[in-house]
Image (cartoon, rainbow, N blue to C red; front, side, top):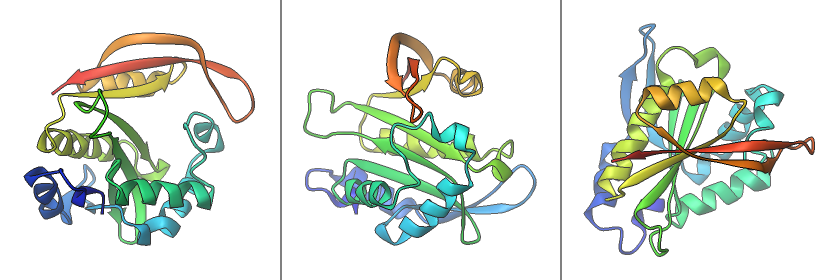
Amino acid sequence: MGSETPGAGNGAAAVQARYPRTVALADGREVTLRLMTREDVEAVLAFAKSLDPDELLYLRVNITEPGVVERWAHYIETGRTETVLALDGDTVAGEASLLHNRTSWTRHLGEIRLQVAPPHRRLGVARLLTDEVEWIARTLSLRMLTARMTLDQTAAQGFFRQIGYQREAVLWDYVMTADGKTRNLLVATKRL
């Protein structure tokens, strides 16, 4: 697992010990939070395919491709990524990932990535998952989180602003969507 990486220290053990756990959503339904493993590849692929195709244009990689999700699982196993899944029964309701590199000059930073399935939006799943990623980041002694989104993702910008992220930079024509169009990338940060 990603948190068993050598040098991860006691923080990795605390992260492992936190999961799985069950939490109630705004509508009273319960979801189980747990760390993603290689055994979740098929469930994550099904989750990705439930997302609106327009939303998939904004992801850095195409998570509907099995090879991409397999590589994601590999990054978890090597400690580059921690992913928390919110499960409604056996269905992935949402996921949040913390990407970090313990050996680079940005080892104090992490990047958060977040997706929630349409039927589970506006129930607190996004907030729940971002809180989990922030807890993991603090436990692993990270000092700052970054979130990246395009300028036309106004709902995402509003959400991250509401939970304490501030706009740091806009990189013009920085990303290209799957359909070949360029978009401006906004980078927001939150100090922990």
